[in-house]
Length: 259
Image 1 (cartoon, rainbow, N blue to C red):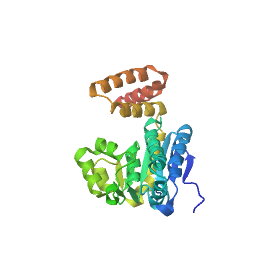
Image 2 (image 1 turned 60 degrees about the vertical axis):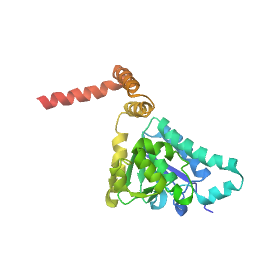
Image 3 (image 1 turned 45 degrees about the horizontal axis):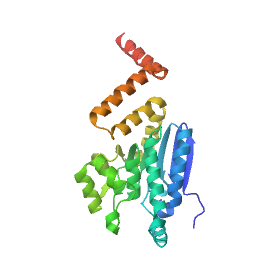
Image 4 (image 1 turned 90 degrees about the horizontal axis):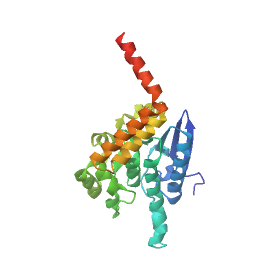
């Protein structure tokens, strides 16, 4: 059994990279990995402006670890609860963090790995990545939020189609379906991930946090209430000192273009 920690974190230039570190198991989810992910997310949000989640060894995450599930099942139904509650908790935490969280997807992103992507704010994938909710192929059902998030992201027909059939999507198809933000060729992947993270890290952190919060909160509200929430947020934002620099930059650029 490997003694390496199941989750690793590095921080550089305002970007925290969280690596799911069980390459021998395609980064399959255990209780320790789920707990480590939650801890890493909390710590990274205090140290960085952007978080990137990726997997070690060329794969994002193959889903739940079957060995772990079998071991926990032997202890009865209640013994399984920590695995799912800890992983779901880490996924839910992403929406609450004030910094954007990017999923950098390559190789396999199956079952729980696919559910983790759905939890992130932005996903960028290699065009040859393999994404699937394949729970039912093994007589399982989603347990990391996929039955609830996927219909909200992809719509009911596509969500049920993916969940009930276990069909696989390439990164390119996932982009076409709106499941990831971008899909790029393998040779461009690292540069694309770094460029996206740098783009976000260079933006005003207060504006980033507020925009993310507006979108996340608005999804829980009727449209009319969401629009009212946005109006109050923009008035409060523009009325604060934090927006002054952005307005100055914009007006300065406009004046430069008109001369």
